[in-house]
Image (cartoon, rainbow, N blue to C red; front, side, top):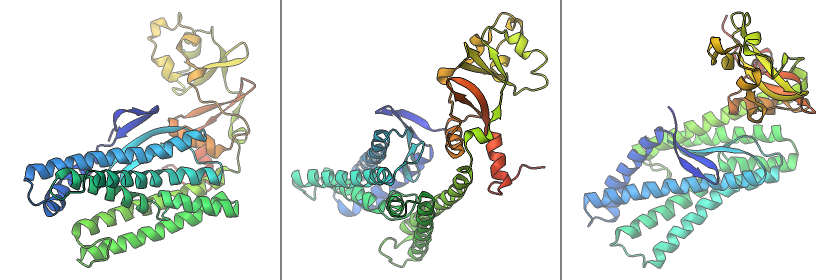
Length: 381
């Protein structure tokens, strides 16, 4: 399902996954039919639904602010943030790489929960300042928003990796052990154990037993879903950590193909394409200008030009310019290269030294190393 872009904050795109609308409908219905009728019985059903809709919209604004807090701290440490996405389990900031120091990760992880707790305090403050009366809809909405933000902040501090509290836990282990991989393994296993506990409590709650965090079908079912989500994410973090440990043994220079095909920008597309595209539709050339990387031209760019124009079109006109390319250095760890390729959906990345192309690293080559290590499934025969 494609995400819907709402706009951007501080240059960070804000996206909504279609699954969020399911959550919006379910929570609005629950507030309008179960919560607000109990707390404000004198109001009409339409008032309850308006209160519920306003509550849910403002709550998800708070979630965006929660994720924005993570993103601001990440950008402070020069870690790119690709987007903030709302989805069925809340929100997530797509931070493109991990922090390089435990203190940086600690501050990044704490920023979100602390923001939620402060928002909760602000809503409670507004409720108190307006007189905290029981008969007005706005008081019930403010009280709900204050409570749910505090609950969100505290819940996110559980040491269940990859939740915020789990990242706080990992950063502390990392700080004391100086071992990022060991800290990730311990934190991820703590996340799995807590997720199993969530699902067990949810199951008991579904049976009608009051276990404080769940006591009926709705709360128990929701806790089971959250537990499944956390357990899956923690298990994926363990698998990703094994991949990273394997790839950290290699640099880009170890896996690159040396002396890739390099052409001058004034060569015609006809010279590059005729007799080649039929044999190798994925052909790839690096274009240089005065010994420096100028761009890249692949079979995709060449096929986009009508064949009658091949003779009159230069490689420099058809190429993707270097300003739009992602290049890397020989010494860069392959784990970072693969993460950037996956994030930007790249198949190849030039390896550059002093502005000149000395090799190319392909995603397929990195994945073959992981297959040989038995960490990902082999290709079907």
